[in-house]
Length: 169
Ligand SMILES: [Fe+2]
Image (cartoon, rainbow, N blue to C red; front, side, top):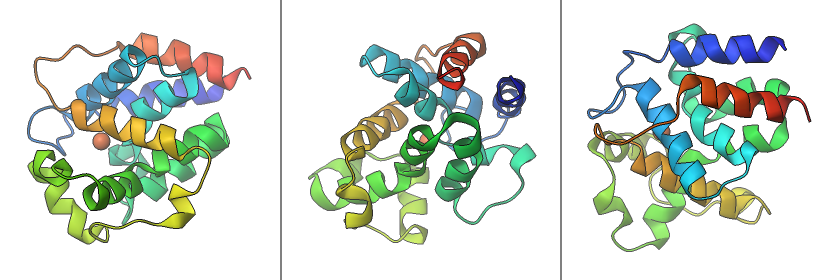
C-alpha cells in the first residue's frame, strides 16, 4: 500500500524538526500515539494522534494552517475520521482554553504563542457538535502530554502496523 510507504517517509522526515522546545516532531508524534494506546484508543484515533502534526514535515511544504493541511493530507490516505480527528486538534485547544479552567496555564510555551494566530480561545459549533468531538478532545490530551523528553513513545514500525490496519479497512 502506497500510503504506508509515504507515511513512513513523512514520519521519519520529522526527526530533527523542532516545533516544541522539549521534543522533536518525530518524538512528539510517537509519544502522542503511545499516550493514545495507553488510553485504550482505537486504531484510527491512535493513527490520528501520531499524524496530527504531519504538516510540520518539510516534505509537505509550507502551510498557513497546519491542522487543515494535516486533514487534507490524511483524508485520501486513511479516510475521513482519521483526517477529521487530526484536523480538529487546534479547534480542541481553542475549546479547552475557553472552557476548562487551568487548561491554558498548562499549555507549552509554543502552544500559547500559536493560540492567538489560531483565533484564540473559542467554541466553534461546527466542530463541537460533531459526533467525533469527544475523540478530538482525547487526541488533544495526548498531544499536550507528548512533550516530555523522558516519555516513552511507540516505534515507527508500531505506528506503521496500525496504519496498515486502518488502510486495510
Ligand atoms: Fe502536536
